[in-house]
Image (cartoon, rainbow, N blue to C red; front, side, top):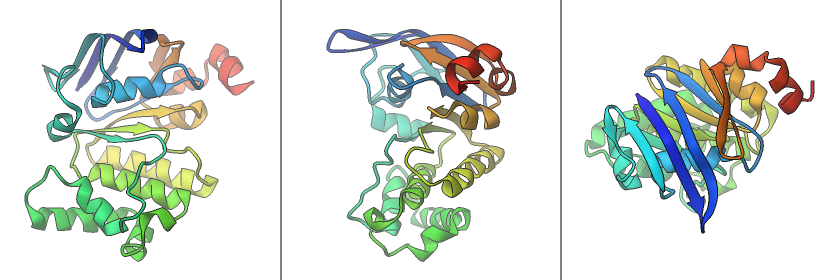
Length: 234
């Protein structure tokens, strides 16, 4: 579904990504893991159309979208849940979900999708009229994921979904990612927590200083001794 080849991105002339190659098969969860500052979020933002690409191709569902504006990529089926959640803090939960469906025209279908999000995260239904910024970090992450799903994406791009939330919410979020994937949504997951990401990923890539240095099945990478020593301290 997604094929990234020789991706190069720089900030003010400083190279951030160099020759990044990765694939996401339809129906899979793929994890991109590595330490802070190694290019995980930059890769995701480039795929989503938020970072300018210096070179390389981003082929989504058979078409190169590297030069397609970010807002148009949402309509093609790519939806980003950004790092730090980036919800509309001064708007209600309900309004956040409605705005997530800005590419869709059928109001009845949008209303039905909102109800599905409330089934996915019942706490959001209880908070539907509450200002989003007044909720806990975990609840806000649930809202961010739900807002991303409101676009009915073929692929969900998730940037650090476990960032800054309590352990009880991390488990719920990870379980939800697997549930959403089982319903047909492909997932590209960026996580600093290598163990959490690779535990649910079908395939994974390890990125270091802007380059992919290792790849393999999630289970195999999780139990790779070099990775365990370098990233898990084992």
